[in-house]
Image (cartoon, rainbow, N blue to C red; front, top):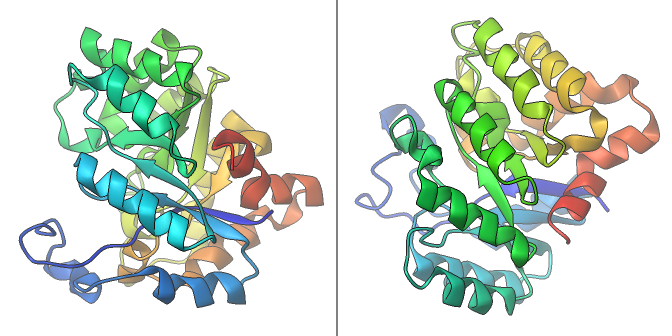
Length: 274
């Protein structure tokens, strides 16, 4: 099974999508399943994982319906209020929805220490009781907190989105790499090789710019804990689908067929229970 483990759909409106800055004007429009399906078919993908955009329960319910209507969407990573008094009730509800596979919170927009909040830790622990994953969306300075939550919730499967957004544009590696190694020491953490082009210079990157960062995650996590994700349509501000895919296919070309099959689908199938 070949899977794009990280993509989005949305119906654009300027207020909700204020985070789309002027340099991201190319994606200030709606993106729907009928836009992505031909692309995935062309590159022989069997499906994708549809990841949350806005932090509402209504969006998660809607995304599940969209996934049911489009069989190529194999799973949904949604959002639920992990601080809600009704969390247990909500998780039971989502457990009955076949396409909901896990949750994430936009922690990159939260202050340092957010993931150390005892209530947050207890909530993330509860996800494992329902076989849900938790996607970690952070910036490099928050990696220390990611290590804390991974250590605190050993039964929860974590997926690190976008390699924690290393500072590719600035060429910074060392501090990020040190924490990546520490995070990867926890076997319950997986890592998406995704979202790289948008962390580089949008208009002047070259494939080799990413290789030192890919070296780090491959050495730290191993091929059996890496997942390919396009981050479509966000990637389109800096690359076509083909270009971002080519970066990773070129880099991983020397691996065994089994290892490549894992990164480009099998690992996602196992982690998200697709």
